[in-house]
Image 1 (spheres, rainbow, N blue to C red):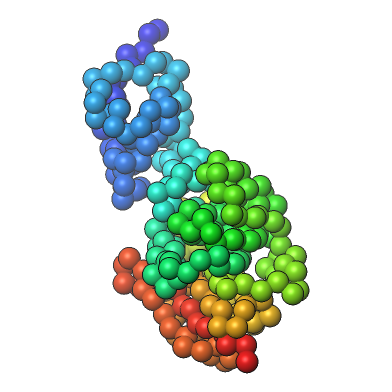
Image 2 (cartoon, rainbow, N blue to C red; image 1 turned 180 degrees about the vertical axis):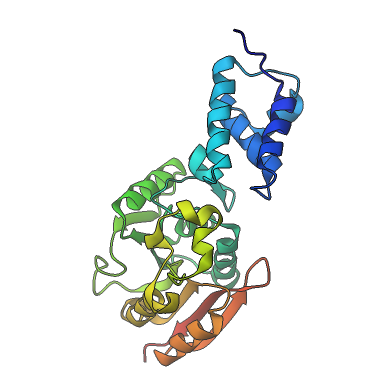
Amino acid sequence: MSVDVPSIAALSEYGKQQLLSLSDSAQLDSNILICHVINKDLSYLLTWPEKKLSLSEYEKFIELLNRRIKGEPIAYIVGTKEFWSLPLLVSPATLIPRPDTETLVELVLELYQSQQALHCLDLGTGTGAIALALASENPSWHFDAVDFSSEAVSLAKLNSQQLNLTNVQVFQSDWYSNVAEDKKYDLIVSNPPYIDEQDEHLAQGDVRFEPKSALVADEQGLKDIKIIIENAKQHLKTNGALFIEHGFAQGELVCDILTGFGYQNAQTVTDLNGQDRISWAIYSNY
């Protein structure tokens, strides 16, 4: 029996209706899945709404739509996610880069954009999002980007190669374990695990599918943050800066930890939604 494949416009609407109760971006989700299946960009859907998919493309769309209906993140389904206008490959081995993390990139650029040849360390790099975004804006800066997960390291390396960012070196390290003891940096940045293992949000939305090792930390989500702050002192140049992403209710706590370990001028910056998101401080090393 032949199947009457609907037009792109009709299929887009069908996908949207299926996802309305599950996603706050149902229309976009549906369109992204269509684009992925037919290997076209979003503008093609607007230009050719009356065109029809082949039967195999239609069947693939339905398969992917069903995965999205079950809650799987769009980024994992299509294997890519844009961050800082960079197309990044993603996989279930890494967190999905989020717009809130661009707050960290913006802050570093605001403070240091005019400086040349800075040496930077990105701890827990995942897809490489933070390091690659900053490296794309500052060709003279050099980045070491590390992650405990060998799968994440492979993915970040591939992203740096595809973006042709030769000023980023990616390697495996459990925080500072494989960073040379005498290596000093002007800047250290990190988006570490910071969610308490009892947090109810772990059972909601995209995070259900993301690696718990990249999300959850002991001590009410602060254990890895404390490790990063304490050990950064050994690897920061005099007046070097440490930038850490954290949960919306952790700003004051992280600033207290920074101050407790001898950092100066600890302060917190809010994200796109006005929530505390990035805390940073200077280490004078005197």
